[in-house]
Length: 239
Image 1 (cartoon, helix red, strand yellow):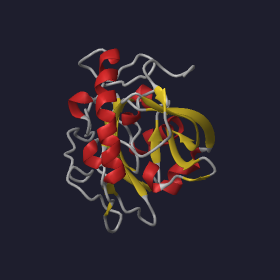
Image 2 (cartoon, rainbow, N blue to C red; image 1 turned 90 degrees about the vertical axis):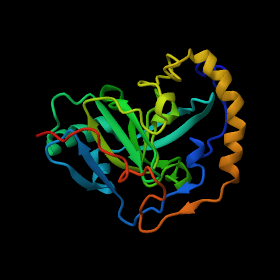
Image 3 (cartoon, helix red, strand yellow; image 1 turned 45 degrees about the vertical axis):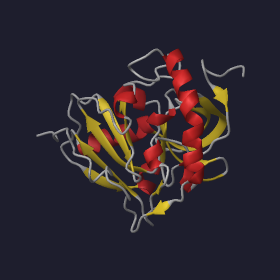
Image 4 (cartoon, rainbow, N blue to C red; image 1 turned 60 degrees about the vertical axis):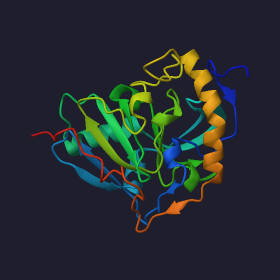
């Protein structure tokens, strides 16, 4: 399809990700919050509604999955992470050496972006003309259009500022930058080779997501091991 990045084919937007998360559906709290932690002097917890006061923006952007499919022309609405970061930086007092940000979701999934890459992302709560649905990341998700979809964490729960890179839930498979334009699908092999690998595995993962019955948690808590509470904070707070 003309206009798509190298190796990508157009597909409808459907919930997708690592197979281990196929059956995980977090229970969304009535008053969702985001915890800001890591290499900061003053960790804090903020309600999602407060984060969304940074100035709403609307953007039409594609979502590019590393497994070689792209959902095109998605209408996202939310706030620029750059604006949120500017506010948070003074609120929590960042360590001057912060260079990375790990985003974690209520489903236990986490991914890391270099800080300058994260500044181009959005925190969104609406998709199309409606509130963001649960299957696509409610109540709040990260959308990083310039990066493969594994960087765009759903059900955002924690923002952790870091001095060092965190491979996140994808581990060795995740590229540090994950830039679509450079086809940074993984650090180990060229992007064009990974296309073939992912295209072969994608149908099985699709079937798993289609066939799994959701497991709902209670009281707005994650439902599986490896959730934000269970993940060790490797970065010491600023002292």
